[in-house]
Length: 396
Image (cartoon, rainbow, N blue to C red; front, side, top):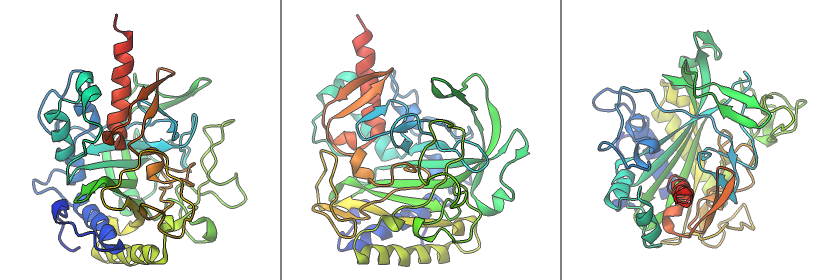
C-alpha cells in the first residue's frame, strides 16, 4: 500500500474479500499521486471520453488532449436503470434530478479513461457504428482498464469564495465551467457562458478490470465532509450536503424547487455486505488515513467496492435479497452508493445500471435500444452507441 504505483491487474490474486479492497485503495493512492513530470495528478492525465468517443474518431493519440488544458467538467441531470440520456452519466436516479450543495451550487462531474480503455476503442475502431454493431457480444475490456468519475463542488466562482479554506480541506483545481440554468423544461448548462472556477473534489469512483474479473471492480471514495450516516445524524461535521434533521426529507430531490440544496445522509455505510466486508473496509480506510496523514488526502475515505465471482458478468438488473451477505454471484458491498453520485438512488448498486444486458437510452427524447454486450458495462460506450444509432436513423 505504501508504493504510489498501479497494482498490476494481471498479478491480481482473488484469494479473499480483502484482496479486492486492497486493490481499490492502492489504486486510489496511485491515482492521487503526482505525475512524474510534475504536471498534476495521475488521474488528471487520463483521457476525457469526449476526446475518444466521437463521430469522427479521436483526432490525436492518447490522451487526446493537451495536459495543460483545464479538465472538462459538466453538470448533468440524472439517470435510472431503464433510461439513460446520452449525456447524463453522472448522477443516478430518475427524472430531472440534480445535486445542489449547501451553498446553492450544483455539483459538477469529470470523467477519465486510461490508456487501456483508449487502446481497445482505437484498436477496434469503436467510434464507427458498424464496428459497434458487429462486435462480438462477449468482447471484454482488457485487464488494467480503468474508468473514473469524479464529483466536484464549486469552491470559488469568478473570484468569490464559496468554501472557506477550501485548499486546506479539499483537493482543489482551477478550471472553467458553464453555469447552470433552471428552466421550466429542466436543468441545462449555458454553453455560451464560461466562468473561471476553483473546484473541490468531493467524490471519486474507481472502476477497473483485474485478472479473472472482466466485470470490473467498482470502488468509491468520498470526502469526509460529504454527509453523515443516516444512523448517526448527530455526528459533528461541516457537511457539504446535509443541512439538519429538521429540514427537508433525506435523499430526496425537490422537483418543485430544483434549486433547493439537497439534504443527504448515507443510507448504507460501506455498502453493507457480510461482516468481513465492512471489517476490511474499516481497516483499509484507517490505513489509507495513515498513509495520507499530513496531506489533503487524509480528508478522503474509502467507502467500499462491489464485484462478482470469477468471470461472471451480470446481464440484467440484479436483485439483492440480503444486503448483509454475499448474494449469488455478487460479492463485497451489496448496497454500494456514493452520496455525491448516487444521492437519490442509494437502494441499488453499480450493477443495477452497469451490466451486459440490453439498454434503452434516451436520445433527443426518444428511447434507443442498444443490444446486449459486455462492453455495455461502461456507459461511455453504451451511451455513445445509442447516439450513433440515433444519428444513423436520421440519415436518409
